Image (cartoon, rainbow, N blue to C red; front, side, top):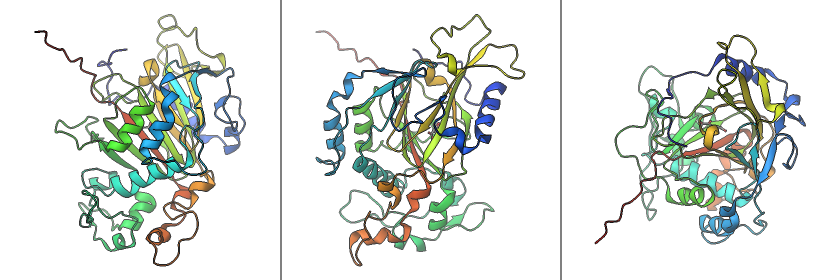
Amino acid sequence: MSVRVDLDAHETAPDAIKAWYKRWQRKQSSAFNASPSVIGCASSLEEDHLVREVIDPRLSDIGKVFGDFMGGHLGAGDHVPTPRVFEVKSLPGLFVYPNILPESLQLRLLDKLLHRDLSDPQHQTNVHLHYDVPYGAPLPHSEGQYLSFFDPVAKTFPMKPKTSHTALNIPKMLDKKLRWMTLGGQYDWTAKAYPASPPPPFPEDVKNLIEGLFPMKAEAAIVNLYSPGDKLSVHRDVSEACAQPLVSISLGCEAIFLVALEDGPADSTSTADAGSAATTPIEGDNGGHGKLRTAVLRLRSGDAVLMSGEARYAWHGVPRVIADTCPDFMRSWPAAAARASVGTVEERYEGYRGWMAVKRVNLNVRQMFADIAVEVEGR
Ligand SMILES: O=C(O)CCC(=O)C(=O)O
């Protein structure tokens, strides 16, 4: 599949898709439980009318990829499960990897994203748009790493509004205000484009993890942060200069993830392979177009979703983050699982114990540029 230069990053979703998203947004939570139309509702995913299982040979070496990320060892309780991969029948190219990341790796990924990468001044956040975000001095012996914003010392960092925005401090920023951070390519949400200037390097360990598991290069990422009540409107990601897959990793509270494509006038796009339960007749005015092909996924901590092929450019959004669903092993993060004793290194995050119990963090990784075939000159 080649890059779709015809797609406009500023275009909004067709009315029928917006209406479908709204219907899901208004549903009672019970609709997300044990519903036959929601993929991932049951405690384990199995082949059914919505998904088919596929084999991904690249995952045969998954233990090594995880071990490298963890600096050589996984946690004592972690066995590396044989990863299972499912393709959504209605949207070929949309793959779900349920529970692919072991628990200790999920915690380590949070550490890296939210202690190390969030406090790296090269990475923009939504808060930077309105405030001068303060940083401490680089930590000694840490190759440019700065003090985590979760450290008690960061509470005193002065934060200046750039415009007439209300006063903010680091705890308030972490509690609710922080909604996204960018890694690698620093996506400009207003221009809906990547700046021409060279991006900061994509964090190498996260890059190796993503590239070891999925068929893509990790060149840009958006780390989305949600609290229950937050949502992400329906949109599509079309600003990358290539059609390589995009991967999305969920940590913390569960969420409902909607994906849809509107087929063109009835006879122009085949829906032959679509699971019938996920083929929705358009309701309301859709300009005379055909059908929606949809998928509703319940994403849990440790799940990954890969959007490739025609699903790479599908409309998608998060209408709901489900309260009280953060897994037990993660609820106390950034504090240690057991209460840390006074004076220990672990104790410094005690003030934020349980922060993650009411959060969902989504690591959404993209390849920005096409793979360039290197021509080797003959002699
Ligand atoms: O939070 C998610 O699961 C999806 C995020 C997303 O769609 C995006 O960052 O473009």
